[in-house]
Image 1 (cartoon, rainbow, N blue to C red):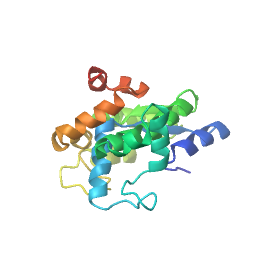
Image 2 (image 1 turned 90 degrees about the vertical axis):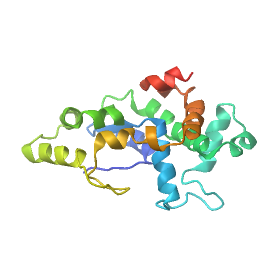
Image 3 (image 1 turned 135 degrees about the vertical axis):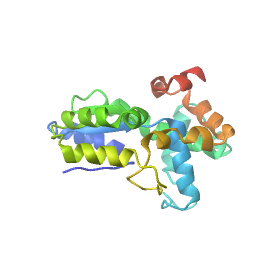
Image 4 (image 1 turned 180 degrees about the vertical axis):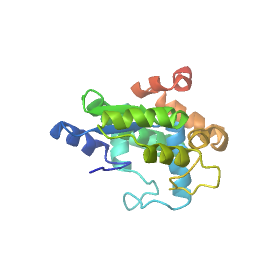
Length: 200
């Protein structure tokens, strides 16, 4: 049984603790890439809104509480540019999840950008960690699904993985990139991306 979710990080930590024979793969994506993707999806109306009264497709109340715990009061949060709000959502989702998951022996953490840059090697490593076989069919699928040169839809499986991982650098407004960096530079997870460490 395999479960794939972009929002079930808290549940994944509970699952990993409760079922030590299970395997969890936790994928961390550069916050600018994540924010750019979610902002694009929201503009295209690809998400159900989390709660009435907000146009943000994330748990805004939880994000506001998390930001407040880091010293950003709700009135200050509400006047932030949208990209910064999304960045706080990225921190709210990923920081507690990483803290709960990373220390467990049945959890493997991988960076999205590393997976896109070398999908064959990292997919092999992930499947080995999960005690799953690697065969020719798997190898062919990984090769085809990560080197697609045609147009890819928002939820498409077949895409150019490197282009997908790096697209935000040319498509995301510099002001939005700066807003994300201003929020995430203080995150303990910033250490995974040198450009975020430099922004400190």
